[in-house]
Length: 208
Image (tube, rainbow, N blue to C red; front, side, top):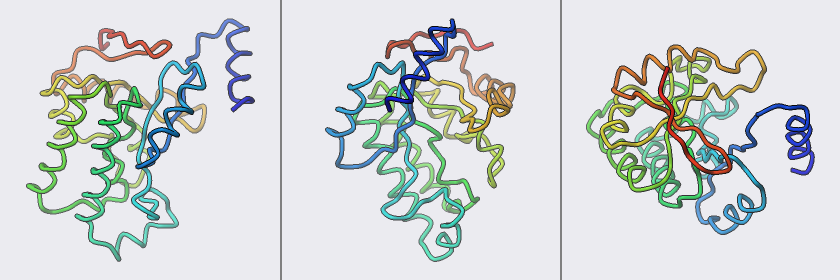
């Protein structure tokens, strides 16, 4: 982390306005440890994400065949259990790629079940300080879709949950990737503004 912070300090010294942030794996039962780490640094914002259901790395290629051996509904239930407690923890400014669990196209056919999961996570988010990320990274993944899907995003809007835009860039050329599609999706469900952060303080700006 010292090297990470040093990179930002150098950038600021050179006149850059880049924000210092992290994406943290949400770990159930480790709220105190996560809070201590977050409070140790002067982050502009912190993204909390779920990538693991127990020992199952849901978005890792090496675990892809594991999906065929598991009950998809059970994986979704456990995944969204963590999204609920992530929101309830109020440790994070943003929840990352909220429906990452769909990454390989394993989606329950039971639409009522899926709606129930969406309902409970949006209820938890609406009661928290946590924004939802619209991430274009999903367009670069096997699912080929933005996170979250339109139905879930519409429920977020209906419950006044703020959004941020993200490309989840792991390479320079992916910075700002397909933002026009993210903006189009956001506006199509009713959003007219996005959240921005500086030193943990949220401000809303027009969605353009």
